Length: 240
Image 1 (cartoon, helix red, strand yellow):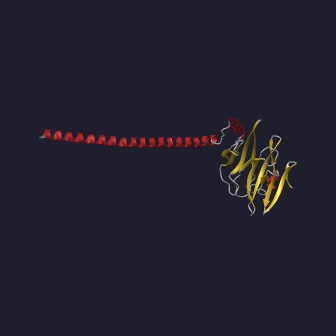
Image 2 (cartoon, one colour; image 1 turned 90 degrees about the horizontal axis):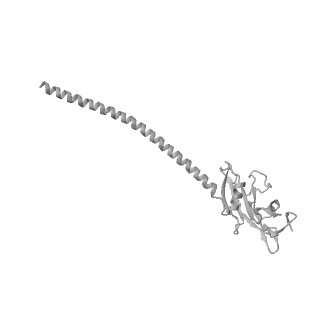
Image 3 (cartoon, one colour; image 1 turned 120 degrees about the vertical axis):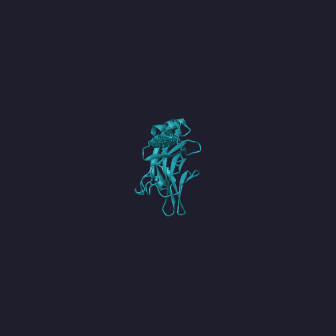
């Protein structure tokens, strides 16, 4: 009987010891699991951070390449002259004529400013027998005087045209400056081809709703139902 009690006591004690060891291991594993979870979460955060960085880099790479033309000579010129910074981003690049003679890079703001257009400036690259010519066009603030060079009026889409407005056989570049006044008069600026260069000619902005009259070799302006004729003379557009 005494021996039986002794055996039972040993069995009970063994069970208690096993239970204590199991609890100890369970608590230790819980601690390790918590540490493992924390480490795993750190790894997830690092992966997400890396993915976000790569995504931004891919977006930047995409923006840095998607505005190039399919003309290698023009692309070389773009790389040489296009200036971008933290305030400027390329909006688009496109040919402005069906013959793919003039390629335009439109540059805009990275952040919006109240009462200002997001469009900031343009680069025009013109193919010629002498290679690629280019020039840059910028626009004043809406807060500048209305008679400022290339002042941009309301509802402007900055559409550009490659056509001869001086009737010398060479195409010029004309850019929309929007609509002015209650009548919505269309205003445009012109860069006229002169001796191999494109020269900004402010007097073109005085021609309302311009149309090219190839038959009479003049520019026709229209305002309030009246037509006015202009010719290019001594470097300026003058009314006849």
